[in-house]
Image (cartoon, rainbow, N blue to C red; front, top):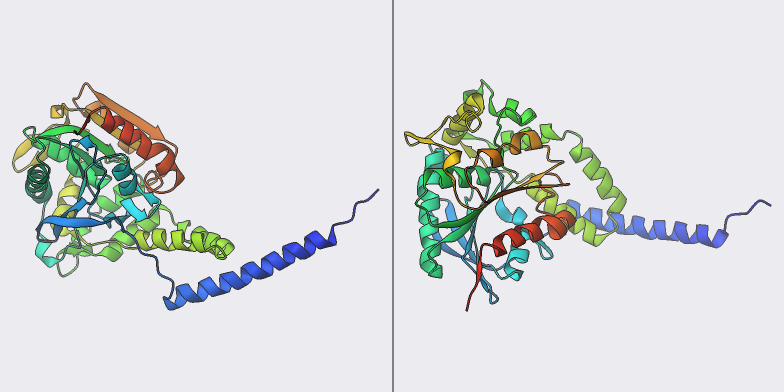
Length: 358
């Protein structure tokens, strides 16, 4: 016997799709006209130190129960609010809820005044000054350091170059080490025409950096827009989409001095070949001797596993761990993987190296 389709079920599906199309049209108009905006970076914070474009943020909390303080070092290539994207989807929020006293260095938007900056400016000046300020404000004698992406590079370089820094532990995420294994990013960073890329202000323009990241996932924007149309009826999805795409296109210029220096590091594969020099000093990762954690994503197309994996072997610490999670570069810090895997594992690592405050 042939079963006939339920006409009421078909009518319900048609009505639902009509309703969703109306919502798609409404949300599309709001996005196109700028009426619908998504606020980001909402966790309350105070600027407690600054120098040039660099600021040290202290996140407000009335539930600090663990010490020492945690200082986050962000990347130079884009904006730090990815770590505090939206309420309920915020690494900062999770760390505060766990009882940590959280600080973060935000590098701001550099301009021609920063064009000559080199890695030493960040590793040997900004970071030590910020660490001193954290210790001064908190009364702590040491801190936990946490670096994300290129912020991990800065954190590793600082820790190796400054063994006198009072650090309890070092955590880095998606941090490149074998610079010849970054896929298309290796080609981008080792371009022989770097000087032609620099703008008249001596900076690598934000548009060039954005285009470089887009070449790593050329279909990402297309598939993202297709997904948006399919789910544009959902206010929650549209809000999340706006927050993520807003951040993904919110690049900042890179100082030409840093770009030249990092190009040399890529050409020499400086970490793997032990050829890092800062301020005339040879810097060796083997000199890092404190508890160390590296979290990397198995689906990371910006810092592939082949680039990130050698780091833990080069660090000299006896107490060191590597965690490989099934996520991409940003997925480690945003969304379900971050909430269920990345952040809980980081919190577990840090709690073992912290003490309860009385």
